[in-house]
Length: 61
Image (cartoon, rainbow, N blue to C red; front, side):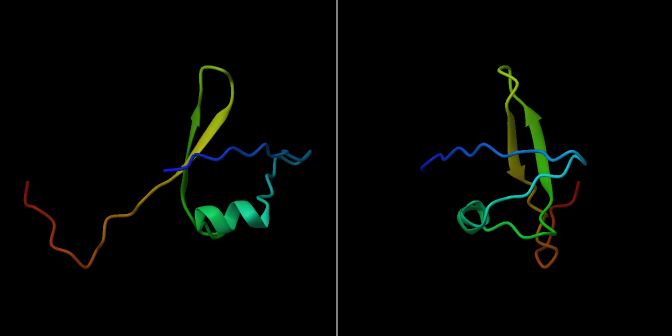
């Protein structure tokens, strides 16, 4: 797996605009849910939150 890094700006209203190449690589869309993790060096990692497939049977607890 190839890991890529982007530096993104946050505007004065706190909005981040993702570049087209970033969205193409990640496959993210405007409604994609993301998890934010703040790393020890102060950088932020974003990870897509995968929803469970509602069409599959879930194991009973």
